Length: 88
Image (cartoon, rainbow, N blue to C red; front, side, top):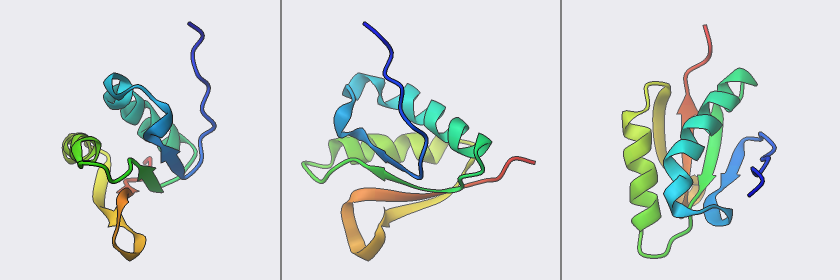
């Protein structure tokens, strides 16, 4: 299977990815965003039962370069807004 090349923007929609790949994907995405000096990002995980959102939040809580995160703008539970630390 060929790797999927994802353009690095300030938004990542997780609907297109296998749930088992989410942790590695988020780690790589955060690293790539910081390299491009993108420090405000949005991760779209959908509403559903909240399982994917909970997984995303657990990953973000333990990531050393995540300064803060919250539900998307206007209380959108289907997305999480994230603030990253800048590269030194």
